[in-house]
Length: 249
Image (cartoon, rainbow, N blue to C red):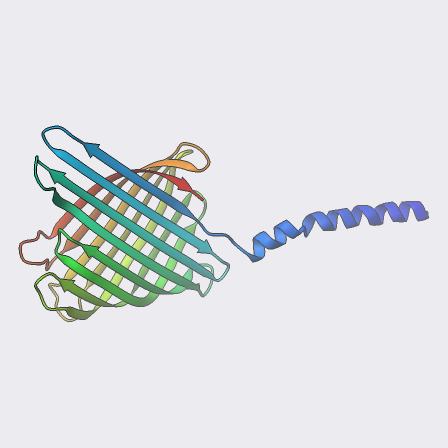
């Protein structure tokens, strides 16, 4: 009788230890950052020499009640025809967002963006805002969310006076696993000014990624920007097509 009781007790203890192992506790209490880090380079020589490079980073930390998102992107290109090189592109952007979940679907948010674009004569654009978001679905293979809020935007164009205005901010974020190793994502934001109806700015970031291994991937990215009131001599629409190889963490 006693030996049977001790055997049952030892088995129960082993099961309890398995269910509440320290590794599982740490994983649940301390979620880790997940994201991607990529870069691309292109060189050509001959009658015309051209150099281009791009780098990007995206990271997300998902907690039970909060979600932290960070992003960075940089592009550069120049060209020479037997003389001094001519700058074709020099652009950089940093963004961050914190989501405060009210329940499984709804959340409040705080967001901030900084951007500079030499060819668009944009010395600096930064914005900070708050808003509300709704997570339609959030699975490993499929996620979709919509957001709406207010932002304070500051713009500095070359040779023009600095401008500040309050705008709306509307956007969505989508992720879809197409096949086992292929993933499509798209993020879009629109900033319509409340002070001047013609002042509208749009950003769309579309990507298709192929995972070569657990951590190594290749990615094709299309960036589309629309500024309805660009600097003098600049076009409203701006398209960039980038290829990069990166590391997932």
